[in-house]
Image (tube, rainbow, N blue to C red; front, side):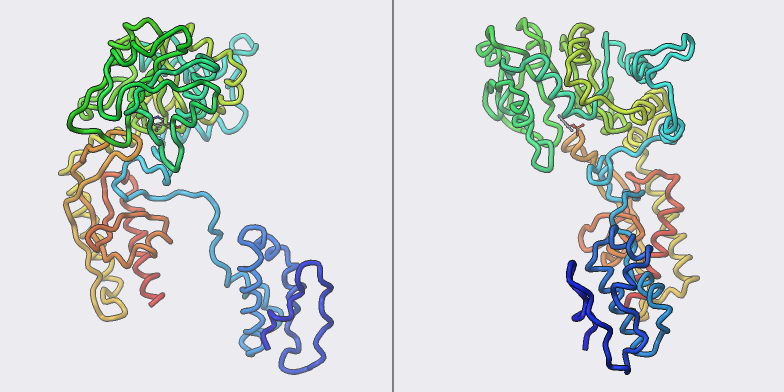
Length: 465
Ligand SMILES: *Cc1c(COP(=O)(O)O)cnc(C)c1O
């Protein structure tokens, strides 16, 4: 008989002890085992079903005479999967530099240190020289203005979506936002910019067509109800062929404020991404306000950057909604350190020379081959693990530069290793039946970690076979 069948349901009185002396004598009752604080903890973290199954397996081992009754708790704990739900570090070997599911931009070492240093009490809104309250996050705002001198004022909110919500609420609630039809984008995971803007109470006034919108289309729609003209960078797709779009400079000439969502967070033009808009150029062209993300090409923490005219930024800062969207001290610390340098990982990965990536891949493949040989190269079926090096193509990711292909190099492994490697917290990509570990999205400082993880994954996969 399976002991699990006797488990009391929640709220049911526990069943009396079985009278049958053999062979279950001495098997600790499920409710008594579950009362152990370590298992109670595990129920909180993993859910009751998984933990009860582990307890039942341990009880089965007592019945089978494999372990003593006193060992049931330890055996049940042993049989639990690792705490799956906790957020932790992952190596992004997907070749997608800005992988939203993997936390977008990895912070620079300086930014990580700044976060740790600000984690206690910090002068986030305090002036140590006067002993009085000071402007919140002044260091980050000063760094932002230093990095983008075209802006007269700056503010920071939770993310670019929050920046747009704040702008729409403060500048256009109950009025119209004039926007081109080709720029009503879906950011990802079902979040659509038009829905986001409409949720603020602003009305969207769509102009032009999907592929062609001219300054005259905007001019015809502008009227007394216009809150602002919105220019959105289509950052995750491209429209090619018979296309036209109005430039910020043309729109700024129409006499209403222009808000430019540049998306990626480039503060100044980047010659390696000639089609990617940047804050300085939009402001120079006459935009009253630029919004952007902090954790895309800027390579910093999740944040929404607001850069622009002092009066417009001031209106946003004073709006009650700002208080609900502002960022915490950790974000401010990370942003300031990102902006002050040294250059964070994402812009470095973007510029990495493909020959260096290839050299890293060769070295890693050679090291792994040696490791695996020393580790008895043959797998369970007697075959060696096939480690190779391939040329491949990395991408910036949904966060920017759609269509830009970045020449890259990868270590290639059997695709069956993907789950074991994920268990080691490494995510690669499967291409043409091979698992590729694309080195453009891996910080060179992590190559040793990657090597150790592959070795551990191969061992685990062998044991699992
Ligand atoms: C990414 C993106 C957003 C959303 O930014 P979050 O910082 O993720 O909120 C909005 N607009 C554009 C053009 C984007 O590229």
